[in-house]
Length: 273
Image 1 (cartoon, rainbow, N blue to C red):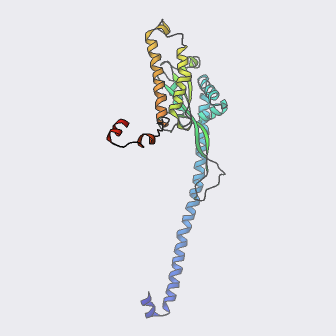
Image 2: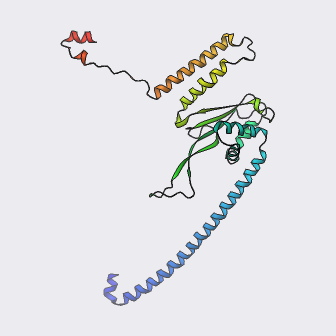
Image 3: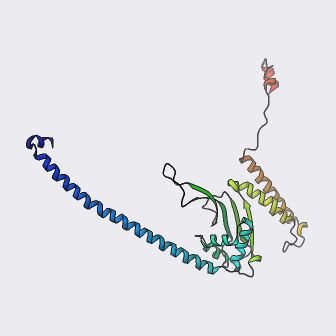
């Protein structure tokens, strides 16, 4: 360009101005359609969100229509155990992505267990301010949700339902065929929660059991006694393991100065050893 400037003098300014006009017009024709496309994209995105919200509402109402005595039994147990209202539990269940697991639990020869976690989860408020780095302020808030127990970290309360047979679960037999229990693993203390559940609830219940089915002697039967002994031993081992993990076993400190101060020759070392 400099070479042309020296050769043609003032012609460069005219040509540069014309080139600038061309670029400006070209840029405008490029930017305007892009802006129009973004605006159209925003409109489509808004319509998509409305459609998704509409579909979600329809799904919730369909699920609400399914709720019968079986679901009411689960909802009432959860509400009592977790200290939520039955309406809150119902809204949570019908909004859950894993809602179909409940029906699979009720089916003949269905799922053997149905798990619910109630624990802190991050939730962004709609009017929350952004941090300086642009990230949102997410606040911890307890959430109840259905789980298979293998994909989410467990750090709160677990509520579980267990089947006692392969019979289909109906509104009339749900209280006999389904057992409910909970154990608290706040802050991820799973071993402590399991230990407490077994020691404070399960073992006392087993030892007070009167009917052992086909075993007529009950607590006098040697197999029953061996079983209860094995459960006690397991809980004891569980407690020791938990204490080891929590570094609760500490070696006592020993003042060795009084032993090494008077060591003079090899025989003193042998005696000290």
